[in-house]
Image 1 (tube, rainbow over the protein chains, first blue to last red):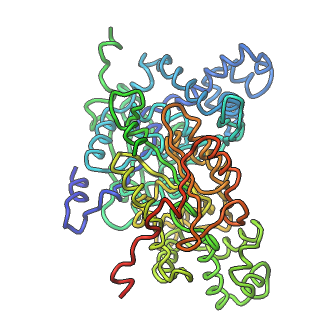
Image 2 (cartoon, rainbow over the protein chains, first blue to last red):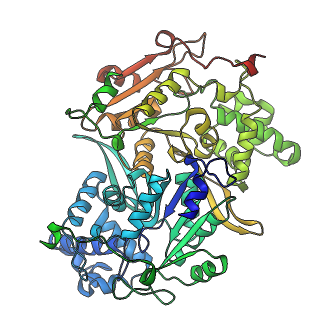
Length: 295
Length: 295
């Protein structure tokens, strides 16, 4: 709040005009959980299972056979190449609109096995409040994520109040086709992964075109985005979510395979960045379950 | 105005919530002139001339020698491959911030030879008024252009009140580097051209993530963007600027090498799209010269 007060107080040296109040957020592990596995992978796995009912050849060819037999735990151990194969099969060969509908249907029914709630209900309540607070102070917030942009866009507006054009993420190649029922955009089996690390400031330049003054992440993959944000002139706020609460969410950092937080944690200490300790700093993790959910 | 009234009148079937009021505009020939040659090419040519003073090897290697000797007219006749070579030499090998500064300096001094005015003063006054009118009605307007995004972003905010994150265009590959003076984003000599035609709806999907309800272009390169916009459900407005005024601007359409308007003009007639006849529909083409300019 001190930072926001500084940049919004006119006629002071730290004042930043509303149009330059750009904030960027990682998604997985920063706005919603990423343990034990990123949620788009759960979606991909469940879609692979559905597809295998119809396309039985998936059950005999790799890497699909291994994943279908081994389950989600195996998916986590795959390399990028195999994961891209799974994304191709589960998330291309349909129009962009069909894909959005499939994701929306899945999100409306799938539940996190540990918490028993919809994934879009398991977003971090304090981050929702932060996004609201920034919005009330005329910040424009963007998501910059390695997860598929068109996956996050399905729920970001309703869940975070972040519209599609403020979601930057991985993409599949899309092809414009003039079909009988009019033009469609077809998702092709080529994936361009928005890499973590140096890929994030690069994507910020490409999609946003200016340097943020505010950035939040939770893992080493966010380090370069935070470094890039911090290195601008004038007031900056960069922060890390530190997952320290095994009871209410998850506890992991330097040794985790998913969302490892090691070098960025050292840097945050050295640079005096904001570190959010989930266990001690957050009274609430998730929004309360509403009547429909509990009833 | 009738269209805007329809989509902004609540509790009617045509009402579109503010968050979905997405408008897209081509830049060259739609918001500012593109004759006799796109303005980024003028910039590239003049920068090539400056560079050749220092790097004399440019004067002996192709395609630079031909262009330096033949002038702007020759640049217009080059194929895409040669033009990309010129973009590489003139617009990479520097940080993104250096590039923005070079463009800003150039725009602050270069003048259009025919009209004798700064390029950023030669934008279409009726389109500025349209952008204002849409803004006042809570539309969000994007530029979708084959010209370099980081070229247009330098002036779009001040000139059109379109912020950098609402400018979609061609890009050079950018590399994140940790230099001694801090991190920089280095423009590399690889160009990804946002192709006209089918490339425009594809870019709209990638950068904006939803279908516009309003689109304006001026050439066959905008056809697919207009078709994609028009094919959505609910009210749509798609339009073409028809350059018919050789006296006050330029007159060209079906036979022009730059900004050819042929198939899209037929389609606009068939589909009853809005066609703006510059000679008869626009009282003013450019903003009036202010005291500084005339004095």
